[in-house]
Length: 318
Image 1 (cartoon, rainbow, N blue to C red):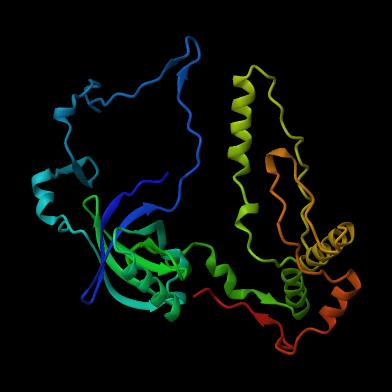
Image 2: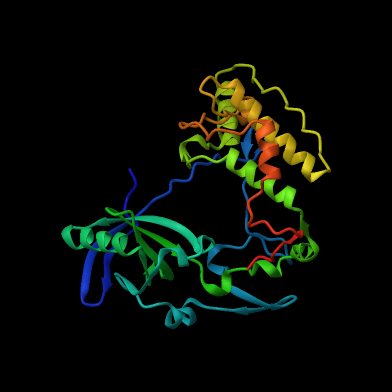
């Protein structure tokens, strides 16, 4: 069971709500150790002086910032102490903003806020946030570090997500390669088929069907070897042939979606299971009905009026 990593209160205006902060995510990962294959002994790392090659004891190791090649400035704990954020047991909500104005790219780590003692103020804030469609934005200090955070509600429970600061976000247009979009032109037929394909593959989001297949496969491999069994491996899947023609690729995708619908008893499309290492749990809800190949062609010819007669020019990302 997850344990609280912080306790204090949410404060806004004159209101104070006692809460505990519990991690909302438990990372699932596999770790390996390095060993000497000759005698199966663990490989250890030692801290050594880069010049002398000698191991350095902990009491001689200091903290330094590099200010040029080979130049370092030592920073002591005593110098950092006055700069550290003041210790606080409060999540100070400074403002409330529309939930859809907080870009998902800003979210970092997620926590569950648990009422600590009196539950009514907690329930009141959860209802108020859900009713207004807003999230509370503020700051709090945890483990001597100040965090920017957003407090949101599902109607009953409060969740807190730490947010990255504005100067930590990379502007999309500054990424190399984005200028390739400047001269892109999209034909009406391509856009209509792309919309048809998106519609054919649309369904409600079911998080349970997505699993870390690689981690599960590696874990199974470890269990087999630990039990003295011969490891079993999935049959490699041949890579799909590359289709250079975008329109041909869209048409082929629509045909595949229609064929998948025809194979499924319910009349809805269902993806065929992949080999063991790449298998996904089946979706709980059937996908929306998929148009036949003939219907898809009609949909292309009867593209909605919103599609301009001239080739559409791709817009740059904001």
